[in-house]
Length: 338
Image 1 (tube, one colour):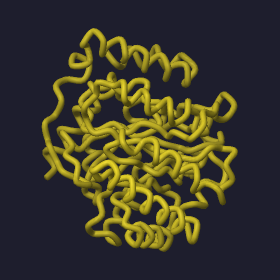
Image 2 (cartoon, one colour):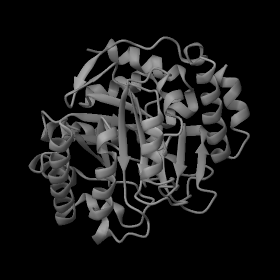
Image 3 (tube, one colour):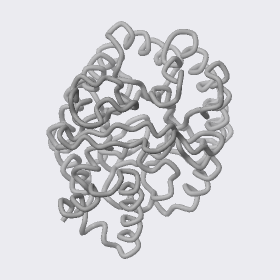
Image 4 (cartoon, one colour):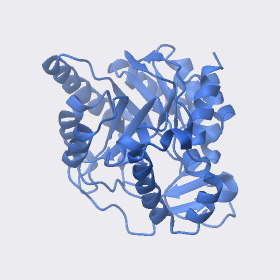
């Protein structure tokens, strides 16, 4: 059934198809049809970051930026759902068109630019949700906030989402906000992580519960850069790392229509680069939880993340191409891979 739906959706502008798909999922959840679409959830509980996940497969940030569709997505059998990226103030993102399909490679290029309704809207949507699974909230900075002032934006968001998140993901690796990736290195990274850790610890004490902090990094790093990032994560007491975001490389899609569009490339072409970074992180940080994301379009691809060293795995582009059945397929493959 999804193959037919996809053939119709792929005739539409990608962003219009995205919105229509989420609206359709909301309707399916209201009439309790999601079990028919995705099958029964896979029961494979695991504890990571001190949290118990019903299974190891999650939805990556970016699909539901405002938590407007949390109930519907949560009903598809994910072990966890990450919403956002959210910024302190609402922003419209980059000009359209800003989302492009590369179906020959099961890939997507986006330059959305953190379009979202602002952190207060997201918090209200999470509070109104009936979803009781594990929720991650992904936070970022506004476009108009200078990189040297980015810390204030992240702290603002952390303060507001802390009481409503099971974990908070810090996005410093999107290629679509100018200068953002500079926060992954050197003094920028150390200062940001130290401030977030201090604030997180204070908020944990205030709320009486620990909310883990995870940092999302890019695949476009060499081994020395990965080691430097790993050292900063460890020295600042960060609870997990999400590897990886989209890539700016076009080597794997050269010559295809839309390949030269600016933005981050996701989907199948990112699998190997993401797995390489995961393996390097695992070697440098034997005990730190890793959430692996990038190029997962099958059970086998999900298992490759575990083999590289990931504890949990996330979907995004593969979900667009394969539909809800991919959730159960990957969750079952991960459950069988121990």
